[in-house]
Length: 234
Image (cartoon, rainbow, N blue to C red; front, side, top):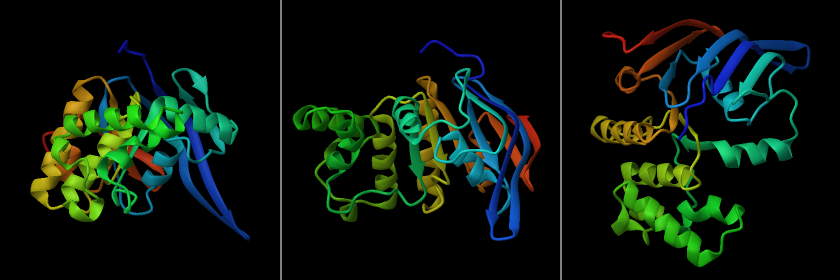
């Protein structure tokens, strides 16, 4: 992958939610640059704005003020159709709850993004099985989620996120439902993915998880409190 300087760039990003007469100012002038190939974590207490920030980065939500540029292109006010196209081209998602379809096999779950790309069933299942092999689950491709451990389900979710070859992987509390040993295994897998050139952004409240990334961005009350390179103590 050819590096792109400032793959993600936020300048004075603002976001509020309005309910009736109430206005909740969630993000307050966020300035942030994430380079291609970085692995960063976003930390903060509940209500700090980290999930909102993740949704904006993943083009799941729009913002109110400032600017978000993805690979130099302004993301403000784009249509849902355009956002969906950009998500397919750029972004893979991993969630705490795995979000696997219970009645489909691991291979069928992983193949789902390829269905939306118009790939025929035989080919997409072959590609999906290859992706499962990449995360160490080649022998679990025909198992359904209920037949897999939590760690295995998260590996399936990671394979699904990677199968369309995204440039950015957004992981929202990817270890939140896992024990400490399995969490470490998932973070090593994300480090391997990052080592292959994928930009990885992890939202987490866990210090050990954040310590596995190269840079930690701390949010407090909708603002960036600080951002450290490989801190000795997080």
